[in-house]
Image (cartoon, rainbow, N blue to C red; front, side, top):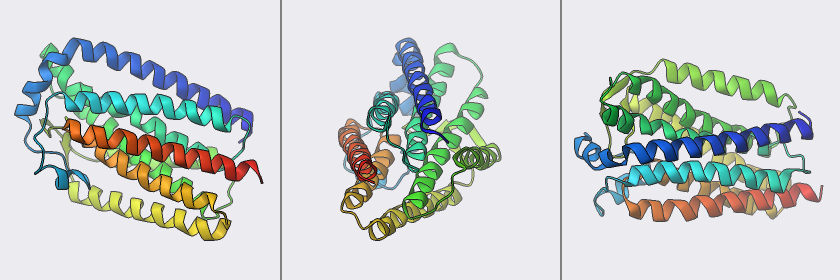
Length: 277
């Protein structure tokens, strides 16, 4: 993929995130009153890696999921703009996949389905479709980071478009085959889906391989910049996990700076490494 072609995709990503942000603002304004009641109807607290450690210490807040969605979409917009500014004239194999990870968080707007269904008193079956979109976006984001990590570790394959489509196809197939329980959700407004343990294992495996690949890249690249790149990815994964499962303001206060700083650390040092090649 040429540099100009990649830049056009990034610009489309900026437009997409902007549209999602406007849409979220409109929907949130209409349905904001139903959030506290939805948390009372939730069957459980969220899962994730970090949330179970924090859950016994803090009580959930009904509006926290709304701010979690808002922060996710704002991060998507700010992150993709950052990539465009830093990498407009710099070709890197990893950054396209990292951009896809960033854009995947814009689809956290799918969690607005349950408040909107409640507000308009329509069928909960719509939550099945949006639940699959949400699951697809989370898988797509993780697999995109995984692809970025294997490129960082030394994979040299120029067919980025094919890999992106293959990634999307695999994640779509996985999400399509998973049953979604539209009648139940957790306090982060994530619908309950089947094979939870299997997907937790998949996520843990992908996260582990991704982190390992970036640390392998430190040795392969022989550059101190990649030490900070790898540390940035660790912070990104940590911040993402906290943000997506946040049902308290405490988690939001933790997640936003961790995710933002990790993204900046990753992007800045990756740009610096390729700038001098």
